Image (cartoon, rainbow, N blue to C red; front, top):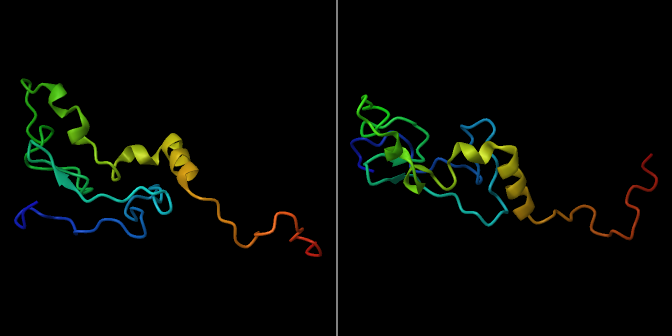
Length: 116
């Protein structure tokens, strides 16, 4: 990305999540590291959450544009993609997180005794 057409901050994530996306999952504790935006071979910034780029075929669409030009991994960001907001991918992330043992660290002890 060049300074001239850079519209987003260097870091889009906060605490391993995307706070600007209401349903964005947290990658914290999953072993998946948030990735910065990148520029694909067509000069389009992928993963900046702007969803519009002057070089994008979507912004320059004509009846002669072949839709297959926008297929492939070069159009998908590994961590800033709307696909992470699906229930299936949220489950995938949750399954990668280690269980939180605190405060119930002794499964053989009834920690709820006397609280009712």
